Amino acid sequence: MADTTSDTGPSVFTADVLVVGMGIAGACASIEAAEAGATVIALEGASGPGGSSAQSGGEVYLGGGTATQRALGISDTVEDMRAFLTAALGPNADQAKIDEYCAGAVEHHDWLVDHGAVFNHKLWDTPTWMPGDDSGLMWMGERAEPYASLAKPAARGHRPPGPNFAGNLLMDSLVATAEKAGVDLHCDVKARSLIVEDGRMVGVRATQFGEEREYRATGGVVLATGGFVDNDRMLEQWAPQQLGKDKVSDGRDDGSGIEMGMEAGAAVRRMHQTETAMLIIPRLVVGSMLVDGDGHRFINEEVYPGLYCHAAVHHRRPPVWVIIDEKGIEDVPENELWGMQPMHAAETIEELAADCGLPADALADQLRRYNEGAARGEDPQFGKSAQWVRPLEPPFGAYPTGAGGPDTFNGLPLKAQGFTLGGLHTDLDSRVLSRAGEPIPGLFAAGRCTHGLHGDGYISGTSLGDGSFFGRRAGRGAAGATGAAGTDGASAAADAVGSVQA
Ligand SMILES: Cc1cc2nc3c(=O)[nH]c(=O)nc-3n(C[C@H](O)[C@H](O)[C@H](O)COP(=O)(O)OP(=O)(O)OC[C@H]3O[C@@H](n4cnc5c(N)ncnc54)[C@H](O)[C@@H]3O)c2cc1C
Image 1 (cartoon, rainbow, N blue to C red):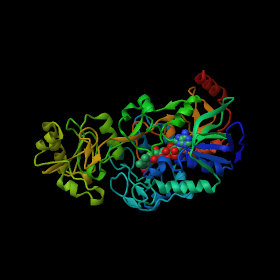
Image 2 (spheres, rainbow, N blue to C red; image 1 turned 90 degrees about the vertical axis):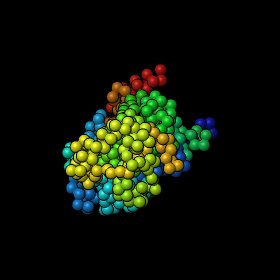
Image 3 (tube, rainbow, N blue to C red; image 1 turned 45 degrees about the vertical axis):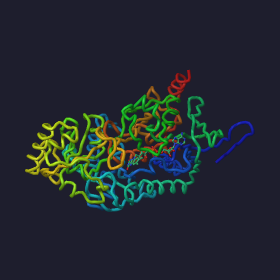
Image 4 (tube, protein in one colour; image 1 turned 180 degrees about the horizontal axis):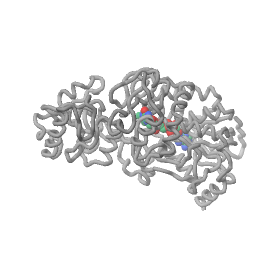
């Protein structure tokens, strides 16, 4: 693509479409734009592509009857997927984005597979963060109440064929596809600001090893720069609850794309929403009582782990503990227990409560109620499935969680961790909207630099999911393939830009 280096100014590169950031949103945007016939330059601030996407579990939330689900004999509908996500990602989830995402999920599955993703026809059937094998499908708590009553359960966590953190497999195939489609990838190039001409976004100013560059796009610019969890200044402003917690990212979620968009007049949405995780073993938790600092259970331990982590960290009185017995620990397959022994063990629940700093009477009462129901194979409090309900018997054990309590356990830091879910306000065509609600001409965005489907809740697979889904739309829009790159809203955006620069 054109490089018009001059003696006096920065090197200038030009393409039809400019994509900033080469994680999953950028990769999918690049592929779609290139396949629509556009010339594409993709900028990546790191020395290679992948971003947080490549470090992730690689889980993509898809359903409605995907080929992978069907091959495993799992029936599903768009309506059930929609009902589950609306409840699990809420309250305050983005209903319009959820609707669109669910309606397109089967097609999106096939597109990912056509572009290199592999989802083995093998189901991981028990609660986990990440399967330790090459299973291509997993549950994300769909069988747990209250969700099971709202939507017919179906496993929807599609994942690449590798153990644990398999996101690199997904990203390797998408990046290879992008390169094959002719996408010109420029690494070690950090975009610094958008270039605005007559109210339209026409490129970015960037640096590579301190040298200034200009990248120009005749069609559109796609921001796909990830979230802002690595930027404490932005966390302080927008999501202070995340300060001091560990950061789930590749270390480059500095919010630069969000701030570039805001400087160009973009609105932001849901900036306070964050994903939360803790060093906690889902297979252990599901057979336990998860109790808060008042000694009370507060959730069905069978739901997607991120949901009880979020509730524990943000909505309950600390410290939160996993209360279990010997059989509960023995029931966890050794390779899923990570060698973890309980921090405290005691013959009586009162003794255990004292060790954990919990009120003894309340914990004893909670255990009595739990065991009464469990003796009948029921969980009257939260409806945990009979498979996971059993009276807990002495001796008891307690595991800390990272929501209050000790700072370290088994030599590991016990800190809640997470990433941000809010960002630039985008419409269903991935156009970035101004504060007046108008599309900013020439500007598209997707992935964690935008607000996704999420409200208060997070289910694994919905970040790679919405990033890839709306990334594709951003790429098509910037290439002019959807008509979304038009000049509607030019004046409103120009006004917004004017007010920011004033
Ligand atoms: C350990 C871990 C496990 C996870 N597991 C899952 C999972 O299984 N499923 C799921 O859905 N989500 C998961 N997530 C979350 C998910 O990986 C991210 O939310 C998602 O990858 C974000 O995708 P993205 O394309 O928006 O950003 P990224 O993948 O982070 O890509 C953004 C890219 O932009 C580049 N960039 C940033 N600023 C600039 C700039 N100014 N100029 C040029 N380049 C720039 C960055 O270097 C980066 O490469 C996980 C995250 C982690 C860290």
